[in-house]
Image 1 (cartoon, rainbow, N blue to C red):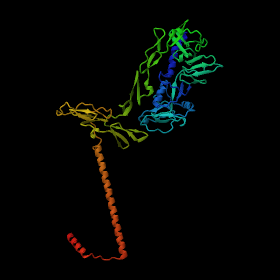
Image 2: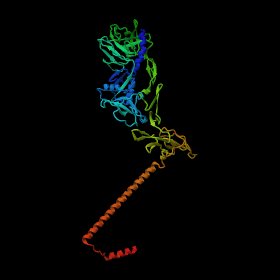
Image 3: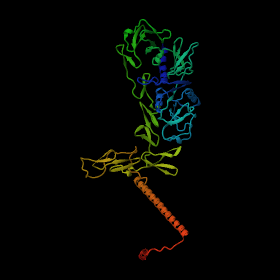
Length: 546
């Protein structure tokens, strides 16, 4: 009996580490794999559910696992086995955050991608095509249609399924049962009769005797075992207390089979009927008493059950203790994540700050007058600047220059330019409303003094206001530049029209002279004498001309 009691605690801890979140909670859909297989100390499961990459990783985490990593040809072979009769597109655990910093590092088989375990271990890769743009987060899928090659794409699209990877230690081999058939069920909700490697917590049931066993420390232990693991292997319910080993019990009208100690048989006289137990009844020596399910305790009346306090947010139950849950394993942050007791914090790489609209995401940040632009290494013509900056090419390089928003007169009254933004303020007697408008105060005398008020400010980014405004990138404003362009275009149009008109007129005159010359050749040249009135008129014109 002491050996059995000593087995319970370590068995529970080890099996729970494999079970993870398998089984779900009340009111939540239980996610079950379509198929699975185990090799040595790892199991791989396939799930058919349309999900984004993040949702798929969360689903694997709930199973006590993570999206599958394919670090070797052997892992690639597992994919071909699981997807042999599957045509869906499935997520694996390879992703790259937004930004191109990792793409500029020395070449690596994984490029700028990382496994969901936050590493680039392994030299195996199986890419279908050259690298794409690195300006947005990208994730990887596999499918039979693409010959199981790695295909990168947006993480927000919905794939038709995903592959999870579970790790464990001390697996069990097949149960020795000569002449009998054994059915195996893993804690990952898949099983069969021909499995060769099984994780701790797997059960094996012999067909003839109906005896049940659990895998623990590489060995098969016969039921009943710890009640918190698969009901101790009992057909109906399991009960235990600190002073006795686990035991099985059956519903009213049935009793436990004395041979295998787990199955139930019909019983004519039911000693539990009179106890009216809220949950169940079990035998204690020669008598019977009420007991409660896991998470409840027996009330003072000896028959009803009451709930006791569960773990608070950010913690999960492990045996009789609440332990911190590592939220970073679910990759909730766009760039960097730090786990904290009961929670987590997101942070950004150098050159980025937290996005004010979503603290889990990061945005480009400069914080000074000019900075080098972030350019895609696969397309040097595609460069990005922080909000409030404009790009400027200098030879083969591109820089981001702070834009003086105050020159565009966004503010009603006073404006202070800052790196990446600007601040609107009002004179005494006015109040700043709607970010940039100044409204006259009705209860103040606006003729008194001058200056600025400490009203709320507005910036286009998270830049900290500096004591002096930044210089303008150019002496010409956008409005002035637009006017110069329009005037130049009008002048060019007028010049083209004038040239076209002169050419057409000269062509018409040349054509008339040609016709007159031909007429002279045909009919000869005759002197034309104008009539007298005409001669007098010509003399008058010539006289005026002289």
